[in-house]
Length: 220
Image (cartoon, rainbow, N blue to C red; front, side, top):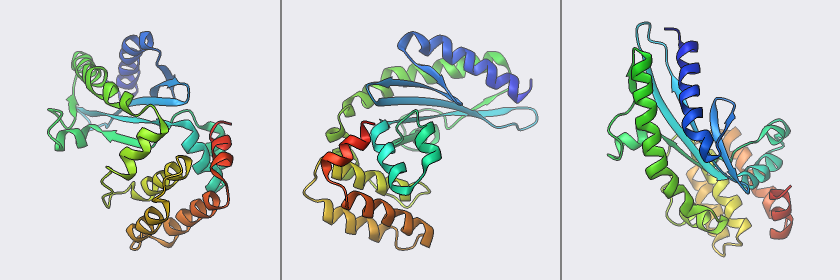
């Protein structure tokens, strides 16, 4: 079995299961767009010669928030290609580390094992992750989750997370925006100059646009 064959097999299995729910193929994964609120799942495999460790990752959020982010940073390429919101990103290994999923990945040798892995993963995705996602189908709810309850840890996605947090705060007119701005600047103190400059681009952009103007950009 080649990794290309496994990927094709997994995609077919995912398509059969998720297409009836409205999900459509989107690059390497499958996305459901409900009036700008999107959910996406991707299965990724690694070729280890005689086996293929495979795991899933999930994104959800609002397309409009990413539109504001890409406009603020001048990323016109991604602005044109955007098909899913990326404010919340969950990996299978993180669910495993939290004790909410039994495996950090699936070590696949056969197509039958791939079918079992996809079935178990999608059962969890449909029964548990999607209902959790649906709790945040308003910008206000998502903003509260990220800025009030979110735990910003020093991981490789931190610089993106804080930008999302500030954009959401401006979109809902959070009265604690100035506090959050200073807090998130401090979180990036030890990051590269490039990361800090990208944060300042976002801050400059959202500080020079009204809430109404930002909402219009989000809805473009």
